[in-house]
Image 1 (cartoon, rainbow, N blue to C red):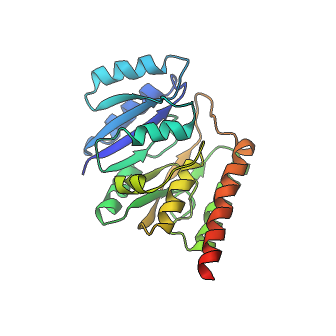
Image 2: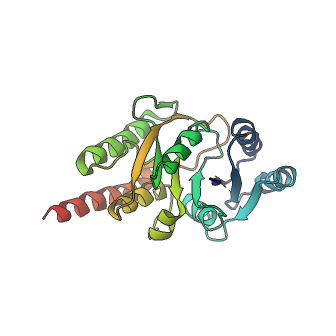
Length: 235
């Protein structure tokens, strides 16, 4: 099974080379393509990606031709994969690449989405804002209990998808909430979802574009939609 690893990159000149080297070093046994999406970078990110793609034959540079945003960069990646399985990986080295093997095994078992979970046994979140950690943990765990959603970490972007899921979901997200929108809508479409533990680490270089208070309305809207849909289903 070949996997598309999608890396959205906006001004990640401090991280992108190290990320590619880590992927190449840590996943030599996997069959994958590395799709790196330049999200309107104004530093040397694009130049570095071009140099990396000439060195490694499995790297492709994709340009986000829509307005700059995490959601649009992820869409660009999804729209340019050559496989039936895809997983976004952050350029800031926060994701545990070793988890990808466990995700691939679950896909091979018949699951459609495999969520990397920080809030279950064996998973953890290291560093970063305590407020962000509380927010993502509350959202994930509350939807797990309220909806029966088969993951405790719906907000984490580190998820593996079958392409048929991406083709079926009508994506409306404007930013980081895309990582919550796709599995929620897929859940109500009847796709099979599971989770595996993973370890997340706060970035050490570069600047994150995730602004919790700015994005709160987007997440809350999806949260309310999911609960309302379940309530109306019960009637």
